[in-house]
Length: 391
Image 1 (spheres, one colour):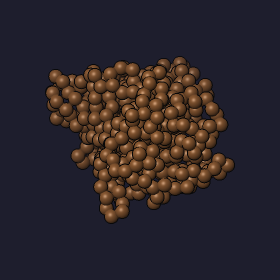
Image 2: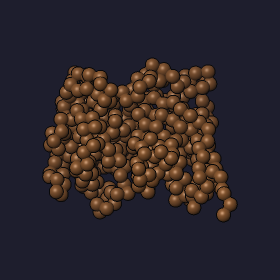
Image 3: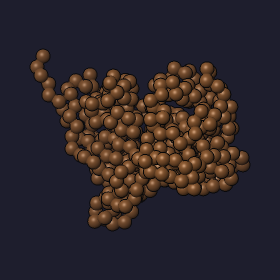
Image 4: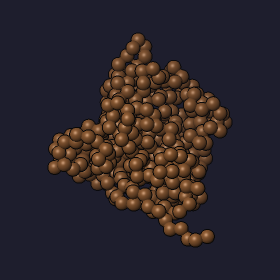
């Protein structure tokens, strides 16, 4: 058989918040990948470098963590009053699957700048703020991404700092509009707090919420933690990770996201599992000392069965909404009572999130949740893909 050289696919490598991913204009994908989702997933996996039994993604664009094993597809939208459609693909590192069941809130901040750079947004001002109206196609929700323009270009550099990112950049504000549709259940079980029974592990108090991304919150002290843990405290503990996965699966069943525990194997991106505690002094992963009075509470969350180095953007939305509803575990950890914003500690520092809610009888309606991130293009050009990848 004659040698077949690699083929090229136009791509852009971007950081958004505390995540990185490879971005594609859908129109630039090979035609067969546009028409066949199986072939598309094979293409994205090979580009990112998965599945990799060594868990290093040495032969691809991924960085061997849930924060960097990501592919993003963006195209012109046919949805009324939206500029672009955005598909988020969480690529498993060592397993053979691509999860499109949720969103990446951090990389949502990069979708706006990417869409503008690709010419997918109409009526972009030369100067000022451009509101890119994003249709998050995975979860069918609207995200508003406010991008600063200067002399006809996206302003990427600025002095806005994010804990978990070493360098400052221009602030990008995000608004997640109706992250939970009024017709949907914000709390799938109907309760602010449930007793979650986990076979072989125990029974824990849990708040299970669907805002941003389905998330199961438990108290840190109930599962043997302080709430100030860093990645090394958990990710090197195989038994702890197995216990977290059992809690996550139990939560998924209770929330009605799956009907059989085996389904969780192909749905690792959702729900998230997180644990909360009251505000305490702690030292971040960078060695920075943070005082308890600089935050309202601590939250630690796992993504793809690993403790996240900072906080997922979608989980931040869940935290913001849950914290603003009196009686949830998140709200109680933050001191209780009525709130519209909270600052929570995470392994890399702290972040402020907020939510605007209203009530229809006893039911909470989430009008929008907000947070700020930053983003920039790291590299653009072509990724080279081995021939036969999509067969």
